[in-house]
Image 1 (cartoon, one colour):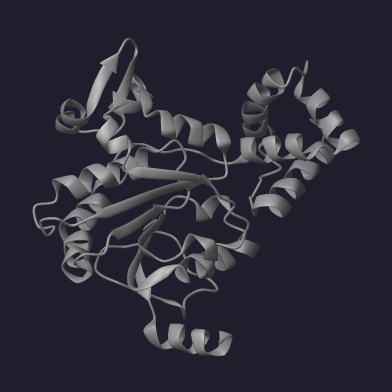
Image 2 (cartoon, one colour; image 1 turned 180 degrees about the vertical axis):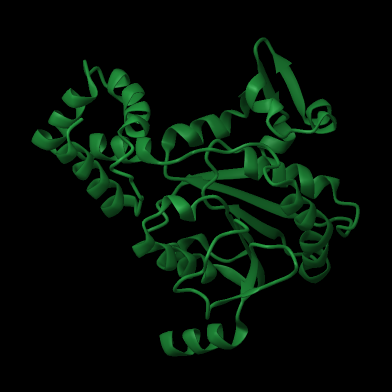
Length: 280
């Protein structure tokens, strides 16, 4: 690919989804676009990009943008985060929500391992109030990732990455060369394709929102905007979970560190009230 090709891809990713595309890492881009080019019937990535330039077809543009996203994930990634949610956050919410469901959103769920891990963790929490209700949501920009997430089917390699043997035995069934998560867990989660740069207000309010290992893949110009948008979707006592090393540039006033657990934040009530008053 030429430097002009890389600049085109970077511009599309940034404009459509706020992606940060490193134009110096041609090999990474080729590894992501190669499978797409084959699926779309092109002889090469160059042919794919040439068609992209000449036709500007929306379906193909979005297929390219989705292919540029970083979808690395695994079950119970960063175990201490899930332990904190299971042992502290969810029990506390279960005491305050009473008859109301606890709404949990994995805002960039990739192929589903994170939100399924949350559903399993909620069921394993010893301190959650009996009868507590949960609603789990998973969203992603990639249709292909969401299709896999909804299927609940994972390879042996994917299962081995982070899933405790107790959870495997309890919640999965072996099907030839794949493992299928139980229908009970799969049916707890609702899925939706969402671009985090879009208006998120139709999603409503959530008690827990996760956006882990995502900010580093977004252009710096949109990171603060995305965090502000997600913070606005939090319940007054809700929790936003980012990666431990994420910086809140542009959103520091809206959120406060919630605990000794790095990456866990709550809304700043004073700032939130002022923003809502100004918007009224």
